[in-house]
Length: 162
Image (cartoon, rainbow, N blue to C red; front, side, top):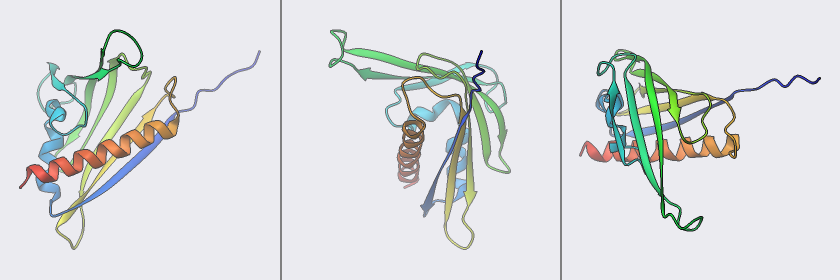
């Protein structure tokens, strides 16, 4: 009998912002239950349980998708519950994991870092993830989605500072 070893997908996206410092951008990430303000196509995000700003906090995030081309029912709600694992305001870093969802994510953990850019008025945002392969999706699909989402979020966060 053959043994199949499951491998993990690991990816990282980086966006550099000019004109927005790490100290300005970090609080937007640290506000864990308000990611819908920045994340593309996310309709809602709210606190489910735990203490705000503390590991163990769980948030619920959802988006409505038009599926009229697939069926007579025009909308589908995609949702995820995520648990804050670590948060470090000094290093401007947080990590979280998916604890439940209806999108086929079997295991997903992400880390967001907001880093200063030396010698310039700017910062760098890193989003790394480790996940089990997602049925019906390639690694490149997930990596591209993460990268485009991060670019959108960074642009929206920078615009909010004006």
